[in-house]
Amino acid sequence: MESIRILTVDDFPETHELLEAHLCAEAVRIVARCPSAGRALIRADALRPDVVIADVWLPDMSGFKLVEVLKRQNPKLKIILTSGGEYRDEAILAGADTFKPKEHLFKELIWTIRGLFPHRFKPANVVLSGAVEARNV
Image (cartoon, rainbow, N blue to C red; front, side, top):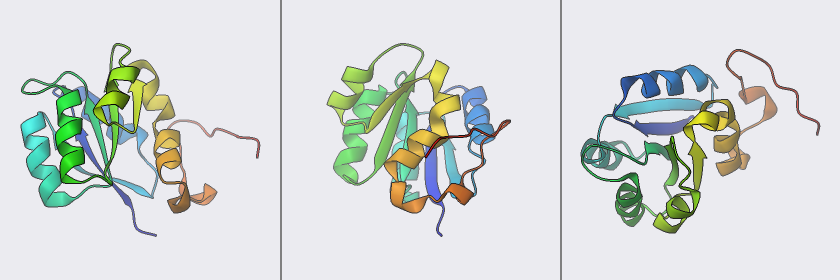
């Protein structure tokens, strides 16, 4: 099974490190870490990721605008916007597939990605960081 390719966009290096630590599923791979929207646009065009995880507040362009531009370039691209505040409505209106507040992002991230690509995950392909989570099926 081919890995889900992820591009992360945040101006804080710590966020990239936390994302990598929480995305330890074998079916997921971070292909680029971008500190700005401009850099993300260049890398997304070159790398063609399956998912972009981007902060709402970036130094050169808002995450909302980044979503609009990325979706014009690749309408099939899945985008998760995140922020310390609550911007779910604005994120969805901009074209993001989902919004996660940073306080919930890391513990819910693999399940969020799984929901975006249900056909690409099997239970054996999901490994959670730090703890095993049992789900009733």
